[in-house]
Image 1 (cartoon, one colour):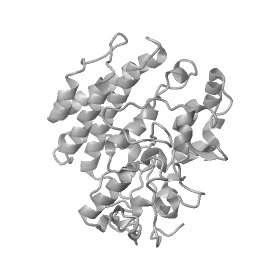
Image 2 (cartoon, rainbow, N blue to C red; image 1 turned 60 degrees about the horizontal axis):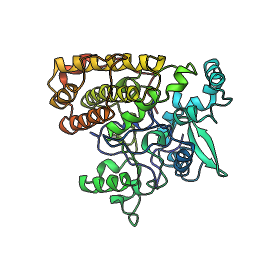
Image 3 (cartoon, rainbow, N blue to C red; image 1 turned 45 degrees about the horizontal axis):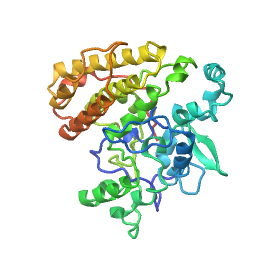
Length: 377
């Protein structure tokens, strides 16, 4: 095991014990629209499937979690060990060997998951190797936080100043609020998706867990999404809150998200699930096809859960957005292209207005069992 208190860290210093969602750094769980190459999302932006040229441009910015000279593991040793015990990591070794994968590839006229654009963007982290696009890892750090070469150094420098000293791993939480904000904003301006950017990370998760490709469902036979819940999947095997724990840097533990944080995660997950499913419906080409039917069902399930939340607690930001929707949708429902973005804006307004302390009423709605077991160092 590498020492958790590496002397000269160059990776993201997760800060303040009250910080939100250190558990989401690797998720995505599943989590991720473009397995490695994610760009920060604004409320009204839409993430279409990348062309190979776009994927290549972003792959050129990938640092990689391990193996390369500058990587995540050089500072985030414990986080990397946690990742190596997840399905996100294992998918690189075994997903392509499964009978299901082989059947889908055959249906799509493809031979290799790691070479097929339809598979690569969600299941793998790709790099440019000798000017060739290569799947190099499973779902990894940059899948959630963005390709890192432009912000790698900035995110670990005091105040985000390249002329300043590096922060020691696990001490970022001790920074002044002003210095911490300046550092993170500098890195975010270069493309880093900070762990507190819950909405953006949730969009990455649901972008893949709802399957953003109609053809691989209708033609390939791929499942139209997974039973993904932001709380259940972030607090289990994907949890990796070490550097923000009370004992860091010398005696770090894998700190679960607080109850207040989990409330915000739960509601954000429902809203982003609904937003993403409706966006998928708005892009459907085969009306009444398998994919279309699945997205309609998923949208209605997310809406029903949100209605249950709003029956328990007043959240004006969400109520105002949901009135734009019918109480349920079907295959004949037309979804305007701008509606999902408006839901995204409402979700971000909710996050800005609520720290979770007033959302006690939703505790009984949140999952009590998590996906896998959190790694313990």
